[in-house]
Image (cartoon, rainbow, N blue to C red):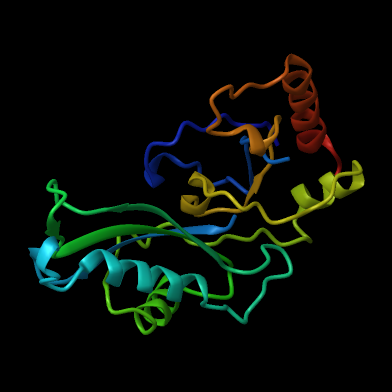
Length: 213
């Protein structure tokens, strides 16, 4: 079968004869769940110890989130992990107790949990209100028996679960995430890829697509 170059547009443009796809991304899929959290308090004057500090409520909830343990561990993706990446209040004055505090939770799930399960579990641990930004990026898995995977194994490659999200999660067909470069360089100030990595990646793609099933 002759390889086809796909430019992501919509599902209607996908050839019906498509059996598998190589998804090029630095990969030297945990699904992603981003949660917006809001802790509510009551404003007051800091000098008089008035109000109910929403910032302290948020801090207590963040501690509870980090203490949460997820028992189901994936053999490919490992355990669920979370990190609080943003915290802020609308308060601009130094002497006012904030009545609201917002923070963002970045959760990386494995295939053992759904978005809804994790959200319900975390909401039960905190007083803040949790709201998911989106539930469309879900965990994906290509069977180890798939010809693409078997070709990679025959070429001396190994399989593992990628801890970063990608458009692969949106593809309604078997897809293998593999690409040149080191994912650890992604989103760094001096992000780069070596020319020899690109050359090796092109050669590997050709070998995967032409390897006998």
